[in-house]
Structure formats: structure tokens, C-alpha cells
Length: 303
Ligand code: NAD
Image (cartoon, rainbow, N blue to C red; front, side):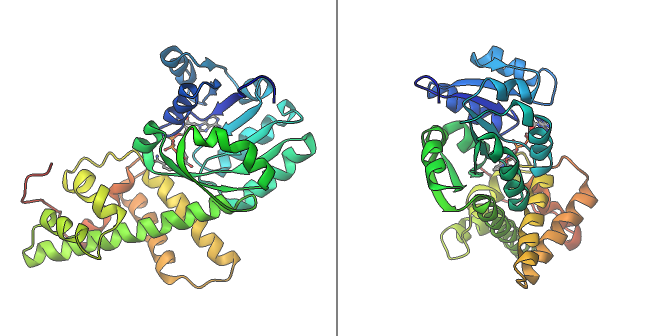
């Protein structure tokens, strides 16, 4: 890599990408941003002092390391396949989207003949931890490539788990989100039952959080985004459905019978069908409310 600090091309300046790119700037990296939404990279550049370019190929051509943070593997494949000519020997490609491991492995074989090393490093922690630079990262790839990527990843995260070869990080990420989604749904159903029985859902969340029913959703989502009716966590329901699809595909590939996971994916698909695209993932609760014929209401004042 040239110079003391790598020049990083950051492709995908959405809810997660923008704060992550800002962490890299804060750590002293030169960042060139690109996004499909016209003006998004330029606005980011004006606000932060990063550089903005119009096409992924422009960003890739001038970079030592390339980060993709796009909705799904579909967009990542589109960007990489269309920009293949811009990749150069010695570059490092960090695919940080929550993507499909098989597509990522295929993309690795496309860039490898050009002398480009690829790792996958999807993240967990949401927008708030992206802003703080405290994301959890699950990384897949060859050890020497992960070693090269580590200083860049450390600028955005506090925990980096190496979980296997290329694609392993994304497999882990999809499975994490499957656990998270199933836990969310179980908790919401408990709140709905409890409310009908006469319990206050807000008090129930306090009890869950002091008991064995505690989950990330009970701690960080039920009061904040569901009972408050804010539904603005910053993680899309469409993206959650995509992640559940990856998890269930992995189950098929490995011939693992997973009725609960499959059912969770189907319910997420039903939630998107009922509510429409562009909803927050915490609106998954609205499907349960619809099915139960009642809406969750906190009796206590929420913080
Ligand atoms: P987002 O939709 O907010 O951002 C995606 C960005 O990619 C958008 O700015 C979009 O314009 C851009 N984009 C789409 N296609 C493009 C293309 N062909 N070329 C260039 N730019 C393109 O999504 P997000 O919430 O930032 O999520 C990004 C990834 O991170 C997803 O894989 C998601 O599952 C994962 N993730 C999200 C969260 C979260 O809390 N939002 C948490 C962990 C992981």
C-alpha cells in the first residue's frame, strides 16, 4: 500500500456507511466516497472533508483499499462486475455488507486474478455504534489479508471476530440476525399476551431485562422503538428479511432442518407484504399486533 495511511474508497454511504466512513476520516484515512443516490457522496464530502466521486470505478482506481457497504450482495456484485477493470494489483477489498457468502466467494474469484485480496467483514451494532466506532465485526478471509485489514476495521469497531475463510463472516452475520429476529418476535408475542392478561408491557420489559427472558430486543428495542411507537431504529425491515433469507439458504445448503428459522423468515416476508417496503425492522411488531388484533400500549411513562 502506498504512503503511511491507505487511501480508502468507500462505496455505499447509507445509514451505516456514512458514519463508518466518518470513523475512518477521524482515524486519519483519506476517504473517497461514492453512492448511487445523486448528490449523497458530494454532500458527505462537503460536510466531512472527504473526497466524492461519481462512479465506483473512479473510487476504486485511486484506492489502496476498497470498502463496500451496500444493501445486499446483488448491489455489491453489480458494482464489482461493472468496475472490474478499475481494480489493481495489491489492493484490498473489504466487503462489509450483510451479504450472501456464495456470492462473496464468487466475487473473490473475480478480483483475485487482478491481484486483489478480498475479505468479508459485516458488522453488528446498528447506526448508533457505527457513529461511535464501536461496531462488532465478524470477519472472513485469509489470515494475512485479515491482518492487513485489521487497522482499518479497528477504526470502526471495538470487537473483531475472525470466524473462517471468505464468506464466513457473512454466514455468521446472517445467523446472528436470525437469532435476533426470532428473539424479537418471541418478546413481542409475550408482550401481547401479557397486555391481554392485564400486565403493563413497559413493566414487562423491565422484568424481562432483570430475568432470563432478557434479549438485545428487550434491552434496546421494545421500549425505545415499539412501545414509543417511534419505529425508527435505522435498520430496515427489507434488510432484515434479506438476512433471514441468507440464513435459511444456508440451512438448505447444509441440509439443516430449521422450522423455527424458516417460520421467522416467512413471517418477516408477510410483514413486508402487509406493511410495504421501506419500513423499519422494529415494525415487525406491527404484524404480530395485526395477527393478535390489538396494539401494544405502555401504561407507564417511557424514558
Ligand atoms: P442503506 O439502504 O441505508 O444504505 C445503502 C446505501 O447503498 C444507500 O446509500 C444506497 O444509495 C447505496 N447504494 C445502493 N446501490 C448502490 C450501488 N449500486 N452503487 C453505489 N451505492 C449504492 O442500508 P444500511 O442500513 O446502511 O445497510 C448497509 C448494509 O449493512 C446492509 O447489508 C445491511 O443489512 C447492513 N447492516 C445494517 C445495519 C443497520 O442498523 N442499518 C446494521 C448492521 C448491518
